[in-house]
Length: 128
Image 1 (spheres, helix red, strand yellow):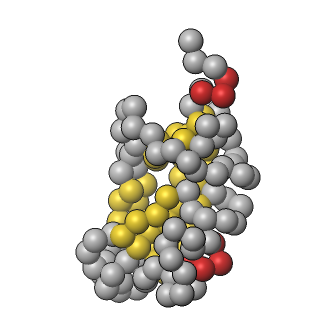
Image 2 (cartoon, rainbow, N blue to C red):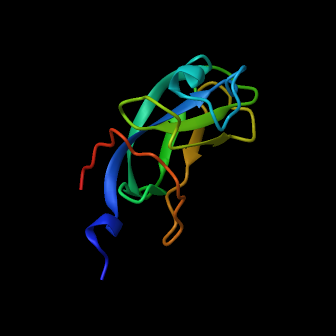
């Protein structure tokens, strides 16, 4: 039986694109203010599966989440923050290819049984 602290929840998150990683802070330490210096466009709100009490993230609900870029991005990165937009991102990464104006990046849905641990969910909006 799964205890209440181990029960998956659906939370609200925001996906953003960035022209580059923050220029002066190591990625592992970069917070919202650092990432804001390279943001491109507006965030896309989506729902994801997490176990907030355990600090575990599974990823976006099916079918994933798409975000289009308003400008050409030569070496784009992406971040996922909670709606309160503070602290370090829930997850982040490099897109791995340039994105043309209007082109979408897709953050794939979470995979069954694969959890990323050690995430702080302070301020998470639990939807279910």
